Image (cartoon, rainbow, N blue to C red; front, side, top):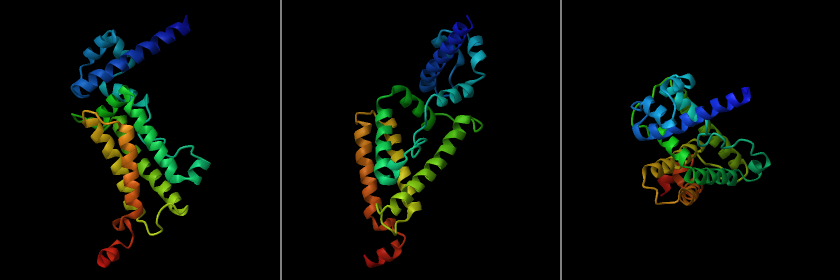
Length: 219
């Protein structure tokens, strides 16, 4: 009996979260009606509040159901990372783009988080996680570029800080553009071409060299 009760509670919680994604996506977090969420989930408002105190609590729970882009960027790569750091980074980003392209729930949630139509509370755990995630992604990407440089996959005089910012901004830029677009383009295919173009820029552009001022003078 206790196990059945526990399963009922978990099932109700998941129904509420599924409903919250739809309501938040249509109305924005700030303007979303918890009554609408409860009705869509087929529960009473009191039942909803027994699981979640407010909209922010719902949003935090939603983001806990997925790994945000880049959170597993270099995790558990092991020998693969040492052998081919740039290949590892490329494979993981393309996998991420493919996963997002075929997962409607991820797409809606990413739109809610990354493209908010209204302000989300600064004390929201999701907001803190996004900010912290950006810092961690930049650090991981910088570490991976350093490994690639040591492995001879990148120029020895590469400005790692600049390359790190450009690669991170470019990859998240293409994701944001895709989320805003009608999505006629396949994100996996677009992301693959975009990554390769960015990588060519990092490898060959004189503007990404530590001695770029000297390179400008020579040109």
